[in-house]
Amino acid sequence: MSYIEKYQSWCESKNIDEADRIELLAMADNDKEIKERFLYDIEFGTGGLRGVLGVGTNRINKYMVRKTTKGFAEYIKKAGADACRRGVVIAHDNRRFSVEFCLETAGVLAANGVKAYIFDSLRPTPELSFAVRELGAFGGVVITASHNPPEYNGYKLYDERGCQLVPEVNDLVVAEINKISDPLSVKSLSREEAGELIELLDASIDEKYYERVMQISVNPEVKKDIKIVYSPQHGTGNVPVREVLSRLGYNVIPVEEQCVPDTEFSKTENPNPETDGAYKVAFEYAKKADADIVITTDPDCDRLGVAVKKDGEYVRMTGNQSAAVLLEYILSQRAAKGTLPKNGVMFNTVVTSDLGDRVCAEYGIATEKTLTGFKFIGDKIYQHETKGDCQFVFGYEESYGCLISEFVRDKDAVQASLMLCEAAAYYNEQGKTLLDVLEELYAKHGFYLDALDNFAFKGIDGADKIKALVNGLRQDAPKAAGDIAVEKMEDYLSDEMAAAGFPPSNVLRFILADGSWVAVRPSGTEPKCKFYFSVRAENKALAEVKLSAMRAAFERV
Image 1 (cartoon, rainbow, N blue to C red):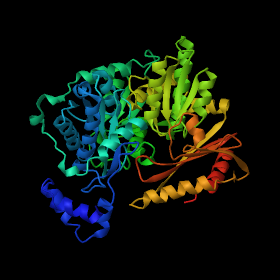
Image 2: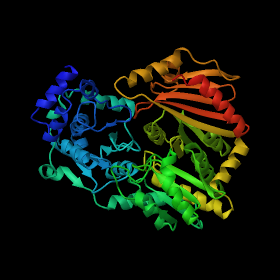
Image 3: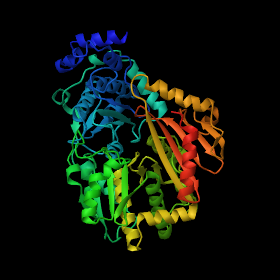
Image 4: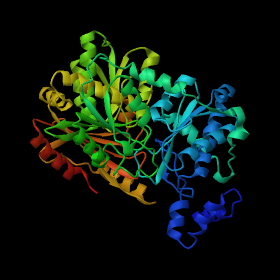
């Protein structure tokens, strides 16, 4: 069926809402817009669904949510009656239509005889992961587009381990989704029609999650003599982060205007903790209160950003830096208390700085690498737990996401907020800041400079442009960056990397002679190609020179 035929079928369908039909008819003379919306079906990729809201097969809307859920339901039904009985837990964030998509997901599951559990309001992604395991559910769904702009929304699936779907399971679900030719025909029940097949969760799940988070504390008796400014970026972290920190006695100053759930993110320049815009208002609060640190979580509260007071200003830490400091704090304190396992392991990704690896090596903790995506870390936790061959101590990605305790199987900014505030309070007693600890790590392990450059390729041709960019580097790799030779290219589509245990992925990683590296990968959730740089040098000035040379050699955009 051509994109015009698909468009016409949607316009004429008896199953489409009148408001959506009006939106479609308004573009009748705009072939470009029709093509953008109907040439392709939005793909359920490795990170689930994520895209721009609107009517059409290449947009996020209730019809495509229904189609995806129907495919998931068919997968569950094939797993048997017990899987249907155990059901699916569904959570959502503060975005446009998140509540509606949550109810549509529950309604489609119920229409297929699958039990659905929903929360009474927005909840953080890590609590969904916890709830799946706590309730013994067969899976989970989170309606979120994380830190994307307001016009986006998304849909992530979880398995019974509370882990996002690994590729082999994801492929099975996608196969079921692809069997559904007409998303407009998928049936969804109202809560009234569903009866007991849709169950509203009570506050007991929240309490159990809070209790588990508070148990991760390494030094619960530490003096909380620090001031903390916190922003949830209008999202799901507002209640759990503030609740946990308050119960443990921390002095938290909320950025009030960013604590209100807001579909438009109207009081923040950017809800992404990786950007300066996320901190602008928080820094104003911090200066007024003379706060010691600023923390902010992204809208679905799986990522944490931090800034530390230095000479009256606030200096942001990268995800690599804050994770390295957390590792130093956790490992040093557990070693001092005799609770550090002899067979401990830390997981991070192939695009994560090596500084954390060096911290772990100092304390006799092994490091294992995974592809980008916390599902791979969650899967590693499960595999080693099943074998009983080593004990998890920490997991993280460079993109501001980490996990301290494995009762959650996804990155958890509620856990990270608590542990980072505890570390700040502990080092404050010693007259040091988190930045001072970072400098000590550099003195011990070498200076690390990390950078991430994103190149956006929007529209229906974007994916082809990204593919051509990566293939160009694969076929004609740079031989050097400045005067530093490129010693090796790791191609994660190659047999070599498959033999090393990595699932096939369109990722390239170039190792330089001095230990620096650059990795290139298409984003799994946005129309972007990402360039990751990790530079190791004697000092910052030399690192910046190396970084410039690496950018010049690799960024053929």
